[in-house]
Length: 254
Picture (cartoon, rainbow, N blue to C red):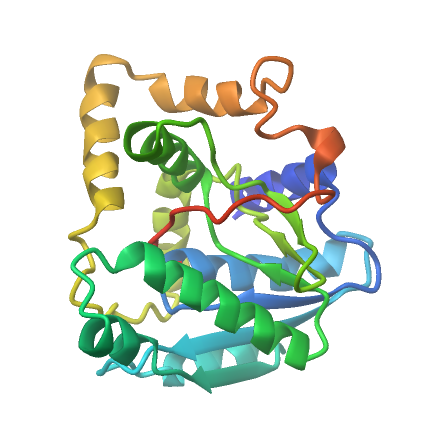
């Protein structure tokens, strides 16, 4: 857990993510990433020296089975208020739109619904559980499928919603996420989405895994490229939180 919290502190310092008085909504999908983020932030608020509050929010997509009782119990144990929002996102995507590649639209709808729920709860920030590999995968997806260099920013102010989206685990390697979720026995909920594990992001994940067999330091170098603001400007710390970026094409269960 020390590694995870150290990465969160570094991200907070580098990108000015959390300020005293912040009211942070944590998007909790039930996946490993968002559950670890929730647990880690509950610890970080105790030693960060910043007085901020947390609000856990889960969007139910309209797919079953999806039992959130374990998440509710965790929130009670770590003293974080918990709200569950019922949506019809799955109905819109699969029944009405009949999307053959549903992940991008689903991510966009989930982001909008989560931001609205956060504002309704009186929060000024939304924390998402994207980790190091998510940033790297999004960069490669953007290059291959969109012909541009783009990834999500760790700290983004959404001017239309007047809310800030932060990603405190952006420096955390996925292997540490997996390890800590098992060690802490966090209540992961199986994703009931029929597209789970069969997406473009999963293809890119497998591609990167194959490349890493030949180039073991590939992920570290790609993360360094993101941080090289003089060359790319993708993670320009001077611009952290100041501009709204285009929607990331993400479909992670996080």
